[in-house]
Image (cartoon, rainbow over the protein chains, first blue to last red):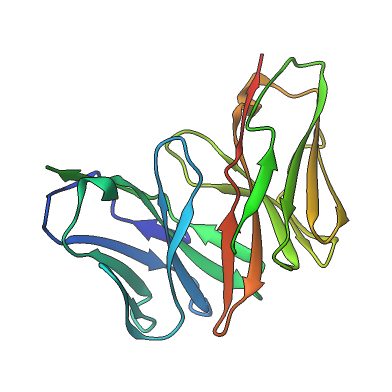
Amino acid sequence: QKEVEQNSGPLSVPEGAIASLNCTYSDRVSQSFFWYRQYSGKSPELIMSIYSNGDKEDGRFTAQLNKASQYVSLLIRDSQPSDSATYLCAVNMRYGQNFVFGPGTRLSVLP
Amino acid sequence: DTEVTQTPKHLVMGMTNKKSLKCEQHMGHRAMYWYKQKAKKPPELMFVYSYEKLSINESVPSRFSPECPNSSLLNLHLHALQPEDSALYLCASSQEARDGYEQYFGPGTRLTVT
């Protein structure tokens, strides 16, 4: 069983719509959860971190965490073509040193 | 400031060459990482240094040799690589934020082994 799983994608949404990206993890003692955006040919960029159950909003991005269900999501409101990228979910498994990545979901926002 | 720098940006090397990748951060982060990323795959952890000591080696072949000369620098020495080692090599560092650790990546080195 994979430790971190994400929507297989690709996910296509029209410009202005809400994009919803999902991630599940297997280790119940995971403490920290992250969303990275990676444009083609570039390195991952940290866009959201979340540590406690509930919602965390930052501009057009909202991260949601449910530790009981071992589920974390990222909502992108008013999606723009510039949001087209691969979104990586990462989970911090052990004492701050080991970050495990999901396979990523490719998002395409269509003009 | 969350900047991690890496040099070179691109590297082409033969299978008999010896080369080094360099990474630097001046954010006071005490953990530094090397990842390997192949196309359309997530980053794959190779090594973790914590307080300048190697804390995680994910069973990486010995042709990859990490070095942490000080708390700001991380090197990856390459020797006798294979064409399948061609990939994007990412350096990262992490710091403890209020509620947990956050990890930041450098721009990467695109390595081609011929």
